[in-house]
Amino acid sequence: MTRCLTIGLVLAALCGASTLAHARPPTVVNSPGYDARLQESRKALSGAPTTAPVAKPKRSKKKQSN
Image (tube, rainbow, N blue to C red; front, side):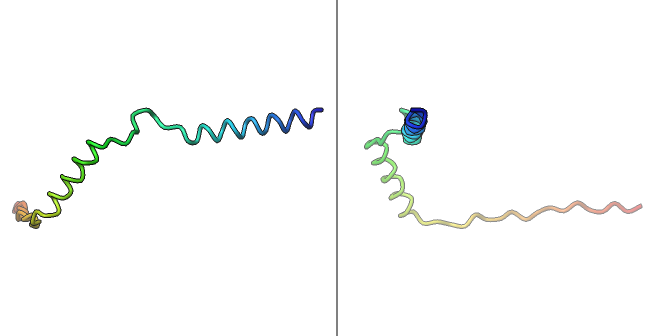
């Protein structure tokens, strides 16, 4: 009797834990409009020529003479 009850509780706990692992917040939803805009922006960025940023020369402080 106690063995069956223990097995039942363990199975219930495993089933409950497995359903929690697949839970997602309601904000995580595939949005076709967002995906289309994202693909358009990536396509526009891939066609644009990339230029390396120009590094400004660093100014160093003069040593004070005593």
